[in-house]
Length: 204
Image (tube, rainbow, N blue to C red):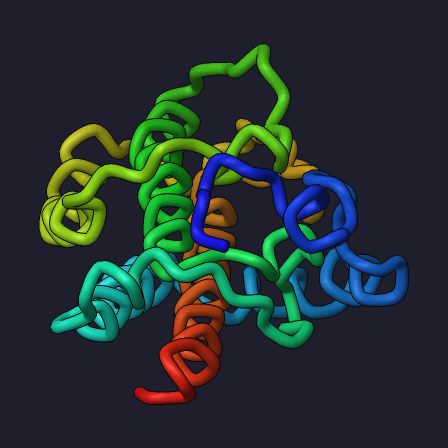
């Protein structure tokens, strides 16, 4: 199974997209783990880790043939990963990271300038259930190379009390969205590592 257009709820019998985490994990993340992280981690540290995790993702993809990039693998439950997202390929995971990253690149500076967003964030809108371009890794690598420059050139007040609702973490200001982005990178880098351990006969 490597057709990225098929939702994991259909392809692997998983929960529907946007169903979220289990109640216990969702409460822990929203009310304990994330509040601690957003106080402890600076904007610069979150941005640097975001870039580092992106570079690690690109390195993990280096040398993979098309079959390994496209093979969908059901990974074990990972902390912070919605059940519906457990049945991705490496290419799907990279495409998802790229989509979310582009949204952060636009929205964090916009929030820092006081702009508002009427449309709510829906997890299901960011799933990679579409045709994945053959150069998805190259596109993501270019995105990571330019992320800091594109983010910083339009950034103003990262602590501005202009909040935008994340469905799992609640209303976040620009700095807190950067911390969320860092966490997102870590979760899906771990997912790619898990995929590579399980696909192609357990190589890599």
